[in-house]
Length: 589
Image 1 (tube, rainbow, N blue to C red):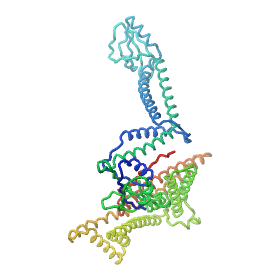
Image 2 (tube, helix red, strand yellow; image 1 turned 180 degrees about the vertical axis):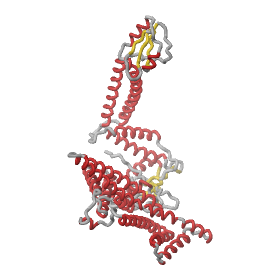
Image 3 (cartoon, rainbow, N blue to C red; image 1 turned 90 degrees about the horizontal axis):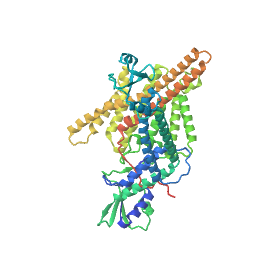
Image 4 (cartoon, rainbow, N blue to C red; image 1 turned 45 degrees about the vertical axis):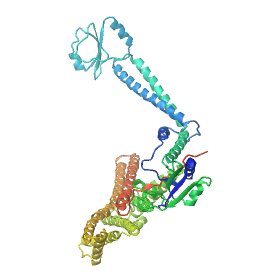
């Protein structure tokens, strides 16, 4: 349900503006109307961003059981910044040291100072690396040279001469320190990195300090933004503030206290007003609000589709997976998560409710399709008596395909009825007639039977309503032309209805995947002596786990898609402004 809003205007003394704004924020029931180019408290916003980034970084390291913490958020953020700078510097230094180690490793460990002694005697030392074939072709006869090793790759060697050699190779430039020194420095730098990580873990123990600071800064930013964007009148002696509120005028004024001097009045929304939308549903429909907001928020002139989207999504999800065993698994996982969630948030509670419904829907469709982990039931099994759709035969698959199409027609018809009732939209009535009359006409045509006259006349009447009432232009010719253009929507209607066949197709795919993994498990058991049962169990567990994951993905994507694309197209406008209350979120002592 979309909560009714009223526009409230407050005019008060500028000297009391700050106190008035604090009390309005404490009331927490208004959505402020700010100018399009609202001024921002830049410094506070930067501080809030910094605290948020540090909190997000440390949250990954915070223990599950957070101890009570004290301290200053600014100090924690400053220390995090210092450690980040040290970490970046160490990363650069380690990269350079590891390059030096890679360069020195083929030559082994030696004292770089000894090279200086040799050079002081007038000797020239040149370090090269070459393949065995290239090394054999080099003019090294009579040249003193030493190999540092023989390997399948390049061979490192050094030449010691009185004059520089010209071998046509680029010599290696040796670092100014030896391998042992480089290894020692790398160890030191890595130890410093570990110390930084340990200090990060210590800082994460005080995550509660950052959470409180973030909440307080968020409150302060919103408060300062409200002050900066409040209009001033009479040479800054008065302030004018406009907002939307679902609370009654009397309750809102009472919450502000009677010791402030201000004037107020309330107005109903007018055409063109960008009214924020607050959704309020009973617990049985509340999870649908989260689903609706995935795609688009309803606008104030629209309707709240939360309940319909919630239950139709669960219906489609169950039909797509459609296996009783899988439904039991999903329900047991939900029970496990529910027990682990000691103090779930309102969002978590709604998601748990949704998960239970999805598991139940999956079990229901598993029962009526007689699918139990893909195991074929004997004809005499009592469970076959409640099988309403049989995916195992061509006749049953044709029946399931028709059921999917009829489900789509019902779903789209609900949208058309909603639009007809809310907007008195006569073309929606026409499309209703076209939808259902078209079913009977197409059935007769495909069977080669004579088309029923009643169905044909209803179909014609539906198109006539669409053509005559798509436009309300006074010029009859323009109106008819616009209506003929609107009648082309039959193509879209036909495509949308056929799109619901994905329910049948995905359900059939899930069943075939079940049977395939069962067959692979049986083949594994028969082909491996003695321990075949172990490998078969692994195949079954892994295979069905993969199928469940694929089913969940298909159920979520296609279950929502049928609501957001095929269904929304016929009744929902969207593009609404969510209600954002001007309130305090920090817990005050």
